[in-house]
Image (spheres, rainbow over the protein chains, first blue to last red):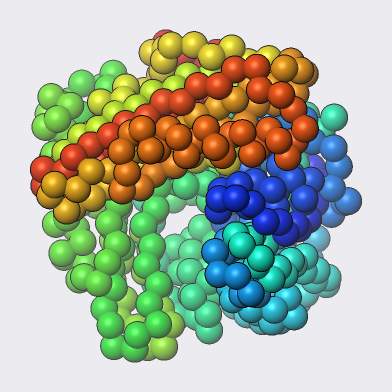
Length: 160
Length: 160
Length: 160
């Protein structure tokens, strides 16, 4: 592919307050450990045979294809949640699928939505799910808050 | 360019129902033949001298720069349409332009919008259009439906 | 990184009218000197030790990671503004941060927002700002207008 091949994927999540919505998002990215890289939003497939790892140290400023869900709210007291999940098929030559959810919801509701979406994604592809995992974040807003969850698609050169 | 050079472009379109908006989108991508790749949204130029081909087989999980238009609706009976089109200039050294449209419209209306937008894009660039093509999709929603149209920017390593 | 390393960054801005919102955006990109490239939206870090330069000539159709803010309005008489700014830390090994703003605002208001957001971004990172710069655009709509500001992340192969 035009990009160097994706060799690892890692999920993460974070929540934060900020004095503006964009700062709340930036602070949530920092809380998630991905605040000093460039996210490029992708829609949203797990390449075949790529291991899922703990979030490694990524070079600052690296351009990282990432499937992510985020929600920012300026309504004090409101609970928001973001979740991303992946499912991997039985057949290792086939790709996995990533689904995203964000909304005025609890973490449990967000996770349930992801599971239902992944189940449909596999049913329509005619594949059986070998493994499914969801990362999610829930935040009750104080002033301006953000919840985000992300799955980063990494290549060796991105890593410190 | 940072990416490997784009060597082919291909248009496609699809429509589908799903049990959530994101599944409807995923299902429409599958119907379009691009459901197992990672789309990276671009805004939206056809590089010079790149041939337009039938959609080839793309490696699962590949990261593909794509100009796309999509609309999802949860209003049964509503007709939605998405279209993308490109125009190529007389001068082969100059780039083409891609325009996107989505809305509560028919396919014919979507296509007409694309044509008008491409004509303006070439008028302001002072270029004559040598060739124009629009790909489009129309869908009347049953429960939760999606229409999408896309032009993928491909490099040889993306292909199977 | 998967991408070739970013070796230069350049800011730019533009405003324009168009006969549709997408044409107004396209025309504003042309006014900004980035109308014939593919923008890939990034969120939004300045890699360490990358010089900021005047916008160079970029290959038509190149795929350029870009942090940008844009606003289109169809309300005649309305004033809209877009701004992006970066701040660079004292420590040259650390990355800079880019912030975006768009809204129904003046250019001065947009710039002030960027400054406040950058100050918070550095405060939470525990870094001191060595240099800060904002590029911004303001437009009072005639019929359908767009204001945009952008910071492009460039690699040598993108340049003419």
